[in-house]
View 1: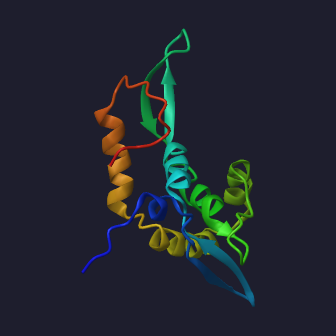
View 2 (view 1 turned 135 degrees about the vertical axis):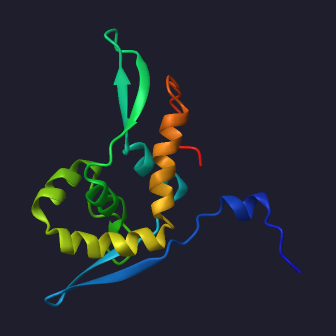
Length: 142
């Protein structure tokens, strides 16, 4: 018989999975799952607002630039799950870390957070489906 979760059980802080990622040369990092809010923030970082001459948001476009670095910033943590980087670190990370090392990290991050190629394509489809939507919910619908 399945257990039906109560409100308290649903709102209880869930322990996020943390995985050690071997980077070679006797070096490693930890990568963890994102919370729902963190995932929404990550997805929001992939959207670029298009504004008219008055500054009003008229549309969104996909901004996949630095996808890997943004995902790494959202998931690289210490052994207790505390994120090590801030959203402002993604550009430095992207410019300073080898593509191979970054790919090693994000492969684990994508698996832990169930981010598939279909998810990336879904972000694009959602952006195409909501032209002119100036909602400020901070999340992308699936």
